[in-house]
Length: 317
Image (cartoon, rainbow, N blue to C red; front, side):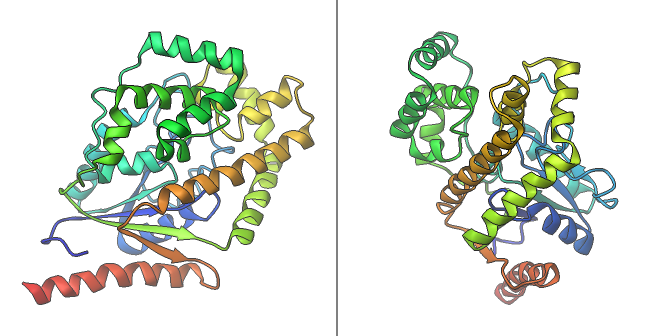
């Protein structure tokens, strides 16, 4: 993996609930790094509990980027992130710090490590109206099946329960942008990327997800959603994501709280499966199994991979 003494960018990826944020934080403290979130919900102000966002005190003085970065009513997207994260990575490097990208939004990470072209991904309002009519007439499952048939990789990284995300993904596929990007993905040659993918035994991962959802409810997820709706209304894009849409349905009387909680757990587990399918196609990912390892041991494994390549670089020069 060594690449001609280029500056290093470390990426901590993995499925929801695996423990990415804590490892990225520990690594940043260890090596003098700054964390750049690659999470399509944590980017929004006010979406804290349901997204698993570290609070200011939990960040322990480590600079975190792209948390509370977008207004709740903004339709923040991967094209914007692609532009901004590249600028921010270089700013971090220019300060003599180590950029550590952390998140589970696979397309956000791919936007950095591959030269994906989003220039032809502008909204197609006519197509969108047709897709919205199809959704109203036949339901979300038909739309998602259509996306899966056209572009399975895109479907794996799209929330199957979120109509807005599915419709937008179909727009991109029809325009050729994402499909083209995934079949021909030239790698970004500006940096030396180390993409670490954290994983756990499935039973352990699902148990962590279930407990995490229970913790979110105890910490006030319902009150968070009520406050967001009171302040901004219901047009917030992130309100349609896992954890928030189920609580919205509860507040609207579609579920009782126990049913909403179980729906969040189920949708989170399904999302973790799709994330893992997406991650398995990353041929340069370094998988780290977390069972039986302390945080310190995981950090040592990460640093071992990086330092081993540094030694190889020195031998080759």
